[in-house]
Image: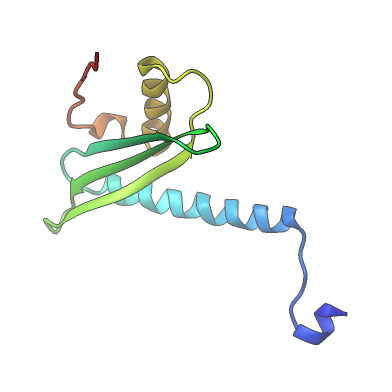
Length: 116
């Protein structure tokens, strides 16, 4: 009934999820290609926090100069950080993200900061 009234086809949540994931994978491949064509190295920044419902999240942004000499930044990932929140676990997650985008070899430098 709603479909006839609005002219829109109602789809399932599985269809929506599938379509979003397909678009994400395509967008991710465009980002991989763009970064691969960028001369030089990339730097990255992390943002970690815990929500009010006590879920930890990690955001990873890369910073680089593109082939036209423009300073760029791209948020590569933002998702829940499950498990223990040790430096080792955070590093593993970061490496997974960098490997996903095939940019591990383009990382300029990492700085190890120990907070007491």
